[in-house]
Length: 160
Image (cartoon, rainbow, N blue to C red; front, top):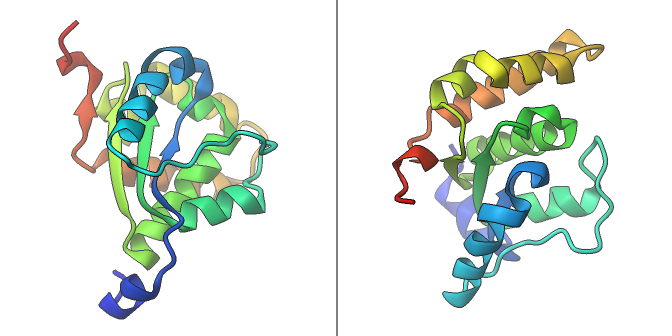
């Protein structure tokens, strides 16, 4: 856990860094979520203008490290993206080393499938891991297990 002195000297450029699979949530949940944060004056990182790829570029890494809170929106295709998995790995490292708060939203996925990498979520994870080093797969798996243990919001409990 981070010491209180490291927390007080840490530079926070953003209140919230959202980590998500745009394929699942960009046109549905995410726009409402971001608008709600904005209406409350919460400064949220958005990737407008940043090139995204399989690895976390320096701008994304900086944004993750300089956010007070990371909100991980776990969805069916979250693990289909190496980029999302790399973000998650860094977010969980920041939680451990910087004391960053991490919140979870389980969007149409079962928290148990995330924790154990089972079901369709697990199949997608295995496909993404195909051809990757075993050490990388283990780091991603550990990050998924850790994030699934954080109490969060589950979309099945939302009123329609």
